[in-house]
Length: 115
Image (cartoon, rainbow, N blue to C red):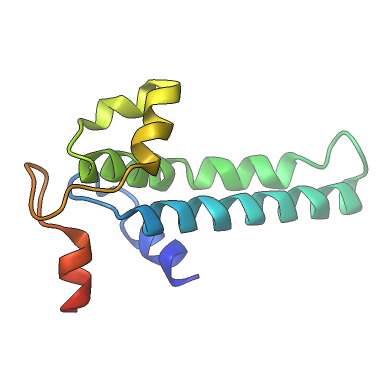
């Protein structure tokens, strides 16, 4: 859960780098929360109108989602604009980041070890 909260704290930070673990843990928790809210909405409002809570939540985390995605692209030493290319961004998100510093900043694995 700490990975999820850390991404929310950096909700408009588009520079720097994000490890694979940070990105995928955010995606996991984001998906679980959205599905949970959708189920809760269906229970409360009935079928057909149950997506309202989930949609509001997804709108609230739109900027953090884009920011962590861009930082993930930066970790693989690619421009954040690659997040707009559907299959390629998934490949980059799964690829190990550049070891050591790159043009977008220091290695997040190294800075995390010393923190």
